[in-house]
Image: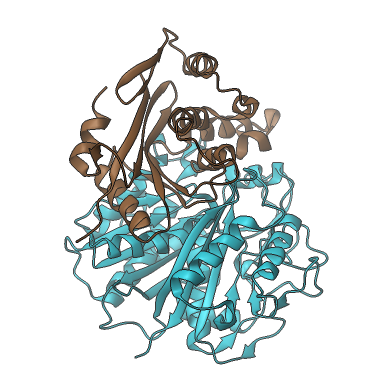
Length: 382
Length: 205
């Protein structure tokens, strides 16, 4: 089968508006999480990683009319534009557009929104981005809960392997809204303090907003320096519960197994795991069980939620991009918020930035609906 | 030569009718979706109490999948049937209900039981639980029924050996308008798995 690569990339977040700045901030241990008291978003205090609308608008003003695009559209367009420009690929019929989001423009349902309710339809979001850049092909929107940002990489690879496209641009994004905060709060899943993935004192998640974009391509020419090859990928359902993870980590275990099989490597060849690590008691425990069942308890692992919070449909892509840069720099980044192991099985959490020769990493995610996704990436050989 | 796949069976739920392979198996004059789908559930002897906790999109998707999969003599332990579903309205029907529950400070009452259904792929989880599917699942949003992308994606999963069979289709629910069309793709079957046939079957009712 033809090889596929993840190449040019962008992260637009509270830690910066390009991948290099964001990764530089991560390497310094700087988190984008802050505590907020904003009753227009949630009746009680919360901790999140937010991007100010003013900051986004002042950037977007240079390329478009801010009154015609929602905050999320501006974020996704700004992010994707940098990737399209860097890639220098003409947007012809061989180029696809994939969009990963869980809730899209859900804030237009609020009664004081400046935009019509029709903007909440995800296909409208797809069309807006497609038309802004003039893509020939219709945008394909993937909305598969919190695995969307990982699964979307598989989807790009699969459309390329079926010969539909040579190159696929992916953009992903979600906002921190009244809608999302109230929902996670009703599950009592939010932590009012910065989250502590895998830690003994973890109490829940923080939410975050981000847009992240990449180019997935079948061409080995003109790759970015941190580009990676996709070796294997899989998505498996727990078939257990719609809002809680499997106690045995069944779907995650199976998805990693299947991805290893396609990559034709053993778990011993994985140098680093970029895990999901939401900092809820159940999720982190489930992951520890699954990685132990896979014999990966000694593989260095981190969660980046302590830097960005949970950024929903963008999280998997965002964390893949950071993983690519981590590999290029041969550096394991700290799993921020972690002090003392608080899961029942041993796992090897990265406690401090550590130099290490990195060749292959695994990215995983798990989400509502019982879905779990895993993708394995290797350094490119050029 | 690339391996070819076939459509083994298909079903529609729309216009107060449930049909399998083009034959009506249930018809009802309820104008209201909730009443219609409950009557269909009873008539089809579905016997799955969790059904009543589901939101309307999940009820529609679950019942459409169930009428096809119950004829498949599935293994009780597990089955490798991938789910590739799509629609236009995502979970907006339920999203509007969650938004209404938080819109006013005086009546602020978000419910976790409702919030969990504000994702379109939850229906894939419901189907996976009932039929023991530890398989691939993806939910796409399109402006309209998109046979080409479903066909390509199903082929990819079957050719790579990631799935033995694929249940594909469209499950759209937006206020009181609903349209479900699911079809099962595998090696054997009478109907060729190509976009012309998929579109023909989608438009058969």
